[in-house]
Length: 89
Image (cartoon, helix red, strand yellow):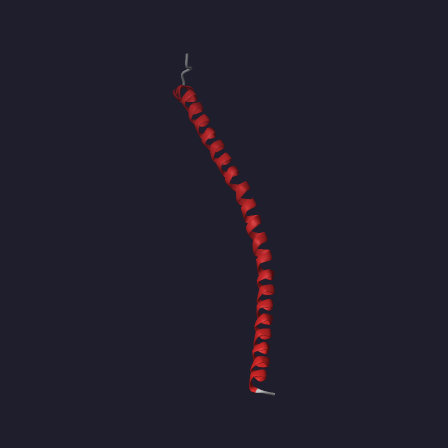
């Protein structure tokens, strides 16, 4: 075998080896990105549910606190009168 033929065969072997490594790496990446992509999609869906429900919960708590505060203002004179033993007018 001549020098340039041997060099060509060696270069072809290196390229084939490089292609094989690239193919294996691509398959490995595909194995990882499939589940990772799925996890990212599910995370986005979870956030799409959690964020509005958090705002709704906070609004309900805020409304409940204001209702309790109004109730307390209305019942304070009656409670004070009951504790003194007199009946409010």
